[in-house]
Image (tube, rainbow, N blue to C red; front, side, top):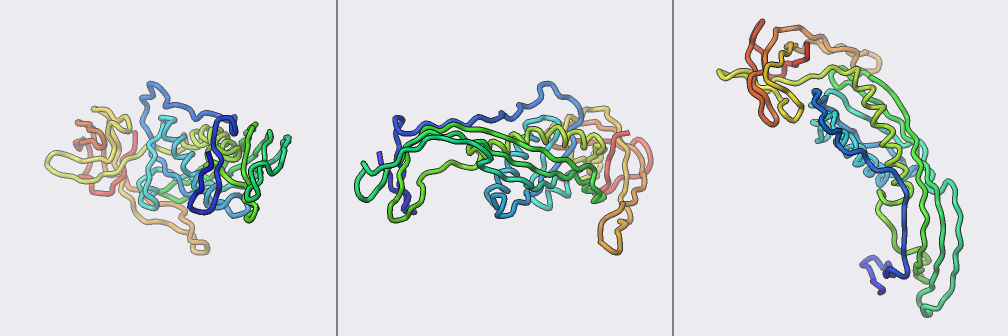
Length: 293
């Protein structure tokens, strides 16, 4: 069957005419039984210039990294742009540094015009290897300091048996696949899978933390609950942010002074928040930071 799409693209469909397979990694499923405290992490939009695929690559790589971190099970992925990064303990910033959608491959192609004067036909078999490399920085959101840097390379190959149509007066090849299912997208997914363990290693240097969202007669409300594996009886130290120390030359955040206020103990755990009582020191305030002892 021939379908004419709104933007003048002809697509020839039918199982006898197209069969495409792309080999690539499968994202890991959530770690079964993980009961440790989940740290919060945000993912910034990947940087990808037009030379490395532009916005399609940037959006695709960002979405795959968010999915991989969420599926890993050790983190709570915070979304929502700048607001999400402020609520997270750390933020991942990535960039595509190598982009070779056709690093190697070959195939056989047969062209001809049996489909009429307006359209020309083409059929063939080809193999293709794609390579992509990403560079990652893990940044502490409370201080702005870089916790770790890493890089990961991904590769994927495909073998395609296809029949396509060429619009004679336009000259462009017709059809296509979304980024994730292309060889370069699968290579990107391969790199993401490798990157998750590197990110996890860097996150071991980040202290688990939560934030006081409110206080009242019922206790101190925290923005962490069962979603982050908080349990009743857990004790947390309360810290109050003070001066932010920045480099006068670059504006980079060098440190944030923190004063210890006291300690609280979790009494009630709900899905996304917990209620604690003060066991030591002064009354916490909204915005105070809670850390494990």
